[in-house]
Amino acid sequence: MPFIPHTEEDVREMLAAIGAPDIEALFDEIPQTLRCGKLEQLPEAMSEMEVAGLMSARANQDGQPVCFIGAGAYDHHIPAAVWQLASRGEFYTAYTPYQAEASQGTLQVLYEFQSMMAALTNMDLSNASLYDGATALAEAVLMAVRANRKSKSRRILVPRTLHPAYRRVVQTMVESQDIELVELPFDPTGGHTDPAALAAFEGQDIAALVIPQPNYFGVLEEVDALTNWAHANKALAIAVVNPVAMAVLTPPGEWGEQGVDICCGEGQPLGAPLSSGGPYFGFMCCSQKLVRQMPGRIVGRTRDLDGKVGYTLTLQAREQHIRRSKATSNICTNQGLMATAATIHMALLGSEGLERVAAACHANTRYLSQQLISIEGVAPLFNRPVFHEQVLRLPISADGVLEQLSELDILGGLDLSRDYPELGDAILVCATEKRTELEMDNFQQKLQMILSC
Amino acid sequence: MSDIPNELKYCSTHEWVSSVDDGVVTVGITDHAQDQLGDLVFVELPEVGQSLRQEAECAVVESVKAASDIYSPVNGEVSEINEALMDSPELVNDDPYGDGWLFKIRIADEAELDGLLDADGYREAADA
Image (cartoon, rainbow over all chains, first blue to last red; front, side, top):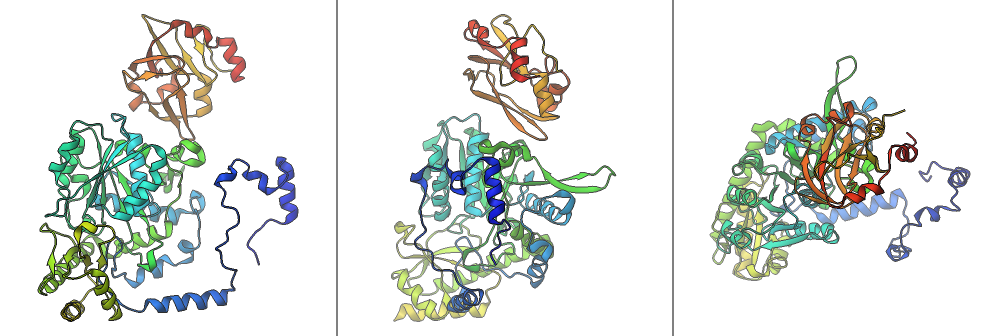
């Protein structure tokens, strides 16, 4: 049964009422050149039984390897209660459950989510989540260009230490809007963005500086100096952070003299499984003075006529259903289910639990790194402190090594040669709190074996 | 029937403009516009010194139900903004032609005012 509620008669009557000859006429505004025509690569429809069979075959291909890859998505333990609760029908099935009189539960969860994210980043406020980390950054860039009225340049400084996929997504989303992304080189010894490198841009008109923490290499950036530089040069500071790391690192609201203006990132480490790359969710927080430039949905707490506490969407006048093409964003929705899981995840862990997770990730990565660099020819590439990832140089091409490790059910890190050919034979490894000493020792032995062949 | 003072000039986009005083005109939104928008919660004003082009967007008034652009009625440069609106946007609702003014423009060419609507013209245009 197709889930289309309108009969042909309904459709005819609606078209007649608005004076359109057919449904095609409703899309007149879209130029022919932008239309893709018939989708030729789509496979034929399958039955539910066939789809279930195909999916379980695909899932079996994944196997149960031990994961030492991070690079933006992290293999954390998720307490069983998280998805047991998040899968309740009230949370799981609702789409755009924002009708205040019928959705107090969902709205309250999102309000709690916002409160937690604002506390974690020590920013004034948070929205109700965005699509994912990379698009959240693109939204942050657009927001900064709108909000920074002192700057006319639409130039954004983006460090090369930022996740390569984020750089590509931001480029795709802003290139048609006359925004220029200027790449900042990284220090080859530290693997960080040397604040001294910014001297080249001193006095230039820059709308915003992007500051990742930790950066793609796992390395901690000099966030205070970078934030201060941005503000001294009338640029906004945009932080891109790992939310788990925020439990042990200085939060962006406290960077430099004034804290950053916008903070965003990928929320997956808070309760979303790796799940072949999605669904994940983005988060975004900002300072009070930028609240009217914040994209996405914001839930507010208020009181009803009887004085009872209630929750409702707020500041909607800047959203696209009211402001149309001039809206703060044209992706005016949120990842409600993922944000719900994250809220439950954070509530279960508490601030102490999250801090222990972060500390365990850091300790495991240090241990793993020590084990691996005891192998001849394996060495850390950068000398600055890391959170839970590290770049290691291998004596031979990473490609083949990682292939052999995966045959032994070890996902031994990410080959950096595609995105950073200047690093040579380098891999990015990660050990979350889930990795045991046994697993890490086994990784070391297998790598030693492969390299000594 | 909303209040449309005879001594002001108007745009069909609901801005009013005062007569020239020492090269400067004052701009606000009409009583009809504030009534249609409802309670204002925020006003985003141009910066002092910013040059404005006639009919270009230069400010935003936001109520609980809509955010609307304000268009500059004339060419010129912003000479002053109503700072009181930052904390009290409701002044626009309470006194749209007085304390609720938005900004002042050092007008480039006073003759531009002749091209704007008078009170009767605005009443007709706005059907107010």
